[in-house]
Length: 441
Figure 1 (cartoon, rainbow, N blue to C red):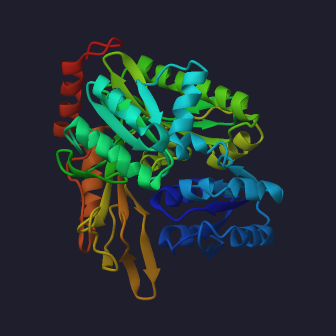
Figure 2 (figure 1 turned 30 degrees about the horizontal axis):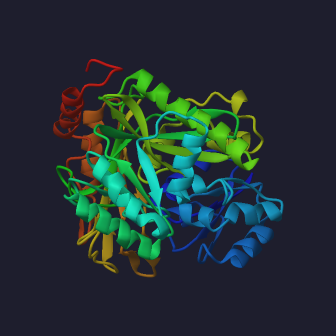
Figure 3 (figure 1 turned 180 degrees about the vertical axis):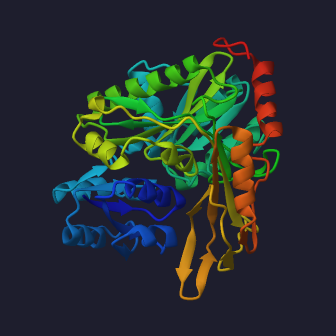
């Protein structure tokens, strides 16, 4: 089986590793930079820009893969799935139109509103023509969240109380967003605990993978600016300490209805990953956003646990036979911790050499935004290496991940508190204080 993988991050490294568990898989990769982990698993690779559709097309035509797996949002937004389809290559990854689920926050909010799907907070969408109305809407909310309508690398969303304090600042940020984006989404601020529910779908069947909790803030104790994600954890019972089975079922229902609505709206079946960023509140589950691909770091928490052959799952997605596959995951806990360059995310120290000693056998290591050069591995301006611990409980998994970070030296730092009892108890206390109609924690 020949598979073309598009992407160069830690998410794509773990995708490559999981696909290669199938001994018949031959992997070919198209990357923006030389990821040493992906390259080592590939028969052949090509480096280039994700906007260079001609280069992607000629590489795909030469290797003639059975299918492609598109990892990041950028090539999805550039229409790589559409391009490949035109030359007879199917993809795990939605078309440009369906990828609006992630690339346009207004599209997704309006989709849920139109098809009466539960999970939307109070929201409105504004452009330059009706910006004055935003003032009134903001005044009518308790606290608000401002979201640029488009891709921002996970760093464009601003939350009242965290990133700004007053309603005037909220309105000013709306004006700022509209200098570079066509629209801005204003939503009520929801109180609760966030989690990621990454779902696999062939457009008809939607299957949830174990829920994961990501940590966006740069520093321990959830301090500092938002990042692409400093690490994440999942639990051996495929829940989270503050989640009930019903919470997960409710989150899955939202995605099942959204997949159906996408088909009604566009006439196309969504084939790939629908990753719901959800929040459990005192009034149940609400949708924060959708991503049109696996999470990074959350992919590292779920793919190593997958018992079912991932290449076969991909084939089932493409052929709309997901209903025939029973996707199983090991009952293990996972903790992922990201090593990032000093100064990240505001002023990261790039082009610094990283030294890697022997990683503990029980740990996983996934290369993110690093560059393989002749004399070794160097940092770029983004996250560098993800360390993964897997064990039968969270405490052991956290210790393995933390131990693995000590094997890597360079001008790097990481959040030591991810997966620790102290931080998780803080999450549980938070939900107890709020109260949730689905549970008594």
